Image (cartoon, rainbow, N blue to C red):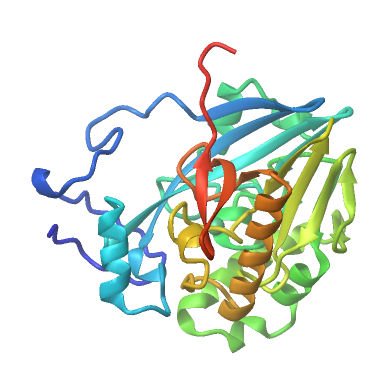
Length: 323
Ligand SMILES: [Zn+2]
């Protein structure tokens, strides 16, 4: 087995690792390779134009996957799917929805404040031909580092996106902004609170607190999906009889979340509630044949949900090169 250094949750895995060739699963890119081409992917949803735009990737401990299950069982599950048992390579897929004169961006990414492998949202928006100034609405799924730390510019006094509307779940805002919250949290989570406050507090006047099911732009609404965080919300876009469910981090892994929805994710604030939400969302997407997008799935993280016994399977969307 490859020997990798285990770090604390969300610590940056700075050192390049050496993985014996025989143990390596097939991957695209690698040490010494230039950045790969696809940083955005575009498709239509009824009358809407939707673009998935990457903020880069994150490296998190694989021990966060199946945190409530026996380690040997989780490792066997990962190995059977050619996945690393030490480090989870997570993508970060933002969704931009152009609808009825509005352009909605889901989450604002890490900026330069989190892991160095993330923070590519602006570069990839440019590659996709999307001017940050053209974004009229921002929908925030939740206030974790990789979703909101990119909110403010380098000086911390102006938002990167001069959008007219910012939407967040009222429960999410209230939870992070509660006075004294940082003191209640274990040391490892304190930076999460400080970072969330730094992103949300200067925006307090501009944030719209949304309720479950509220429409934020034509054909785009937010739905409550608590568990990963207490006020986590997903985004639903509907046009011309087609629908897309933007899952945020309610689903966090292309295999674990679908095939073992009852396995806890180590970063879920309320694991039991997260399981309930995960099953409800997967059931809805499978029943209504909705397209789904999830933030941490392999780029572009777009596909469908198929039922598989008592669990589910992620069915990636087909990438078409020539229209
Ligand atoms: Zn995340």
